[in-house]
Length: 225
Length: 88
Image (cartoon, rainbow over all chains, first blue to last red; front, side, top):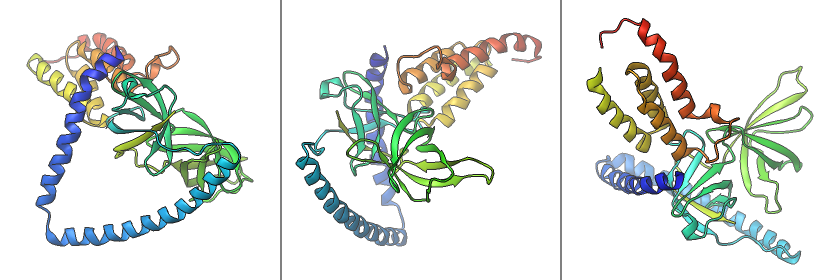
């Protein structure tokens, strides 16, 4: 029944996404020139920054892929590209509805990635023309991960809204900005440490992290089995 | 009050499909609280759970579902409404 209802509603969501994109074009037509100039310069600066990050990431990724292939592990390429039909805050459960389903080669349990590489969740339900994705940040969702600083294995717990909570012993060194990676061999980016809470009398500290993706505005994803 | 029932029902349905949860959830529970025996609220709770929650509802997780809370509040409101003086 889930599949029937979602199949019936999916065309409405696709129409909404198309209409929203068209309305934003019309809105841009009326913006003042000065704000557009300012935005243009900001975006150029951002593009330059991203090109630099991509260049440094590409060289590291190239080295990693060589090492993986040398030891019999194939680096990850390809996947199924999908668009997001529904994301938070329309969904109250930290789930996404995407427009690829069984007919497009989707499998239950497939990993879901951003185009830039970070991993977001897994496919939890598959229907003929669409699927549901459960984000790792869904409340109560527990995922094994690594704190990059000293490769410390941790269990991150979803706190909703793209946020995570990790409990570590107080002696573990964690700094705001530290990366949290997936526990598999490919070490995908899972989150970034945003805050650390600890009382002087506590034996543990609470690390609050956030997803690298803005889950409220994702449009494209890559799914890999 | 019954003359608002159909427009509110349509509004909640469209809000569930297109608007953020912080709009349709308060609307839904306002409908359950204000309108007499708003059974459509249970249907909308089920719709929210079907569209946005994972399938395979377990007894341990039912307490987190909108259908459960809509039903619970609807049932709780039955004796409360009898004791409230309304001019609806």
